Amino acid sequence: MTLVCVPRSVAGPGDLAAALDNAAAARDAGAALVEWRAERLAERGGEGASVLRRLVGDGPLPCIVTLRSPEEGGASDASEEERAALLRALVGGTALPRYVDVELATFAAGGPMRDAALALCAKHDGGEPQAGGPADAPRLILSTHDFEQRPADLFQRVAAMAAEPACDVIKVAFQARSLRDALGALELLRERPRPMIALAMGPFGEASRVLAPKFGGLLTFASMSEEAATAPGQPTLEQLAEVYRFTRIGRATRVYGIVGWPVAHSLSPLLHNAGFAAAELDRCYVPLPVAPGWEPFKATMHALLDAPGLDVGGASVTIPHKSHLVRFVREMAGSVEPQAAAIDAANTLVVDDHGGLACRNTDVPAIAGALGGAEALAGRRVLVIGAGGAARAATAACAEAGATVTVTGRTAARVAGLVKDLAGTALAGETSWSVASAAADALAGERFDVVVNATPVGMEGGPAPDASPLPDGVVLDADVVVFDTVYAPRETPLVRAAMAAGARVVTGDAMFVRQAALQFEAWTGRGLPPACVSMLLGAG
Ligand code: NAP
Image 1 (tube, protein in one colour):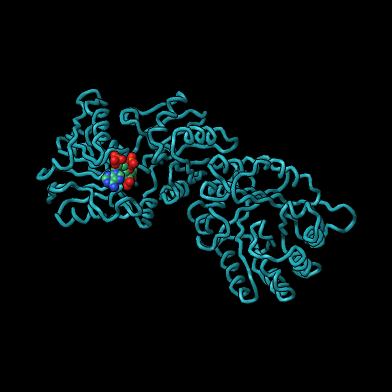
Image 2 (cartoon, rainbow, N blue to C red):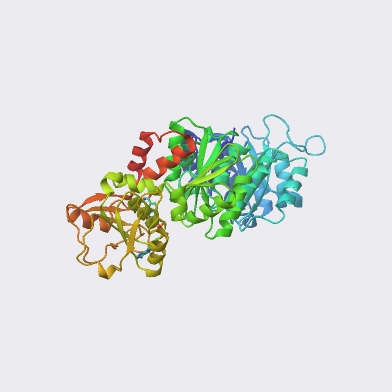
């Protein structure tokens, strides 16, 4: 079982009580270990030593003691002699740490930290230091860190740690510059020569931290809160427990995720993981950030699908990769559902048990559903604002249902491209789609039955959070339906204007949960448990 470890820095006696309280709270929240980052205590001589003894002796959890130099990412200028003296203060004590962590380069240099760590781990008795030792003696973690990148000599470093007879646990941590880097950490775990901790730091690294149990990692680190994280990309204890259900992840867990850029604030992990848990399915859904561009997308998808032991069962795909997914599935001789092919955008990848690929677009039926389906749309006049992926999906949903769609947007060429691609399409083989464009300034005085915002205008953190995308003079009244695809916030300036005009409002979450429910069904053959939807609407 992979343990959850909470790191905590301690600077002096003033921190002691809060540190012990924090560790107790971490234990209650599911942590099995605490890492005392204690290098700053090394500056305080005997006073620091007595604080460290209290942390180790009175702490509510087994612990790792770590004393790093500034070059190793430590927060203190204490000399190696001072750090070694602090470690030695624990030798022969009644309470001992479970692990001591020493950086490989420091250990290999053979200085005082090496001697102190070997003495504390009782590895000096009886000749050449060896892994293992007396049952109650601390175990030695040798670690290597790179805060910039995946080191070019990573395999050599792992080999050097594996070749060190005294090493009980190998730890590797590096900054991932891509999801492929992060997958490399999981690959290291899979082939571990000894008990191992391997994790990728930074925004690309979250999957490597969450999926460590699938690959037999000894532990993963989690912080008490986002502010308390000691390394970039470290999840919180709450995220591990509540979002990822970490303790349920194992070798057989099938992996899903959201591929896009950015994905950090997506609600999809919350929704799909809750769905998998409620349906008692051994699956986990993680953020899979992939930088913009076809080449990064293609290379990452190959890496994900080919990673030994990862077992990817599917993915949600979002901005800016929806048309890349269609291209990728075609290149892989998979199946592209007709609606996705028609609008050249898919948001759902399904991987069957034999590795065969299929993609579909669940935004289209989600939009149709949010607007009341074909019955509510047939024969209606619809205005779609925007010319990107969501606008294509909205246009297809409404036109396929028999509505007459007018598309408007700030970039005439993009609107024209959308109309050229979609006007006249006939998916069902009967009526062809009625789609035309209009310049925004030609719409004054026009009234539509349905108005759809398919731009990020009004979105929190977007390009114009306080603006409404509605072209001047477009009439809103009690018989108009206004659908804002933006879901954060639910009440956008457009939604407020629609409510003020007495129009019927449909908010973006109505689309979000529908497209997610259809993805869940595509992956599992089951409906998304309704409790998950209510939980998400409560969380938004
Ligand atoms: P996209 O492909 O990047 O297209 C965005 C469209 O919005 C483009 O036509 C763009 O204009 C236009 N636009 C961007 N900034 C603008 C501004 N300041 N003023 C006017 N127009 C602007 O993105 P997308 O995938 O279509 O997504 C668009 C929005 O839909 C997202 O921001 C999201 O809020 C929403 N959405 C919601 C859901 C859901 O489940 N509720 C799902 C997907 C998307 P140009 O043509 O000039 O580039």
